[in-house]
Length: 110
Length: 155
Image (cartoon, each protein chain N blue to C red):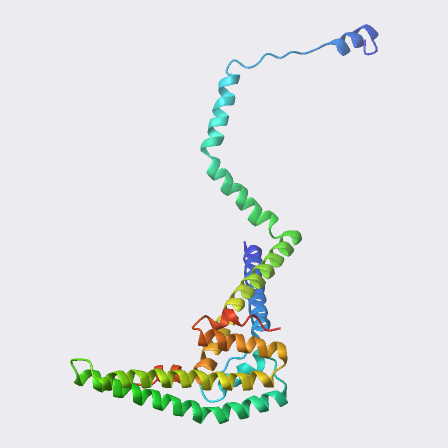
């Protein structure tokens, strides 16, 4: 019976066409709606997963440290550039006031 | 949770260290001098890349010019005070007021000439390129423009 070629042939040719559950469409739309309602919660969940699961990994740690270095360097460069301009303008003003008799009179009490 | 806190604290520490080191390196060439005698010359030496010999000459010129500059300043203040007393004592035009105004204008002109002569002497102590940049700064002051924008950037 186990080696019955006719039965084997019949089983190989057999195609199952299951019919959808009676409430299949509604069920799908209910799940889509439920997912949309919980979209924000889903984002937080994914963010939490990333933060607590992926971030402590070596690749993300390296990227985070590199980003911290770049941000620190860029911020310092911008601030130093502004400070240099300020000091330069201040020195120009001080020097010119020291050689300009008319500017000297501005700084004296009247 | 503990690991993520350690990572975040480490990232912040690395960022702060990066900021401090970069800022320190970027500002190391800036001469910060307090107000006072010769303090501005320290900046001049750095800004116009003066050699020690050039700086000595500029220093001597500056010290020689100071009393001249102070004299102009005193004369200008006196002339202005004189005009002020005339204006307060007169309610109509008088030739004395006209003369006082002319005197102030004359002293202002002398101040400008004196400053310009000093500036040409100082520029002559510098290399030709730095001297030009220095005179651009002086010209801007005389023409009441922005001297920082006029003089360009140091090399």
